[in-house]
Image 1 (cartoon, rainbow, N blue to C red):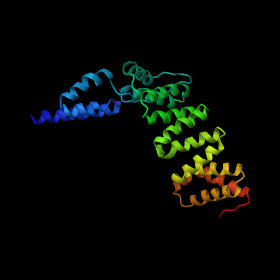
Image 2 (tube, helix red, strand yellow):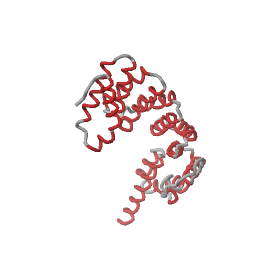
Image 3 (cartoon, one colour):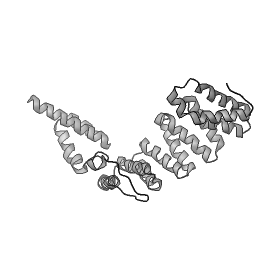
Image 4 (spheres, rainbow, N blue to C red):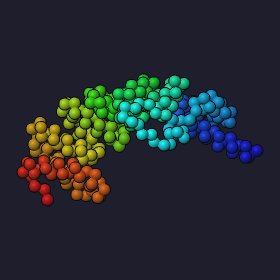
Length: 253
């Protein structure tokens, strides 16, 4: 009897994990716990057995497929489309969008992310993917808007890269004032060297030379305490800051 209970518990945990990975409704978790072990069996036959493997976990997807230029479909995208056809889940639209994004097929990724957001307004992953795809397509205004919605929800999303991406979109879209304000927010919370550099450059363009020099000096100064791996990563922006300072008659030791 103890063995049967243990097996039933293991099965329930497995189904709960599957439920979370598929982003099924949380009510299923409650049903499986309250109606143990019948709830887990019901979930298996109602959801899992019909849905098949979770995209990205099937054997065919353990090998990375290299697409030829212009090739649009792979086993992964076809499988995700099949899942969408059966269940119309926001999660599957988001995963399909992410797959296209990874393959640089941005025009195909954008509608998938939009549909995911339409079906699940709390899908931050879809908002982030949409922002990145729109940015890659050069649609900086819409990209900034998508990332802005995400930043309102979580300013620290992806360790600050979401709000940094929003600042970049404002800058590339020619909205200098919004870019300055957003870069300032980035610098306050995350010391991104690239953000400091572009912030200083925008200040210089607006005639605020002294503040621009101060920011560049801060960038160079803070680089002296960086570990080697970080220093190498930020080398380009440090060198650019040195060039800016030298051009403006400021020598740094």
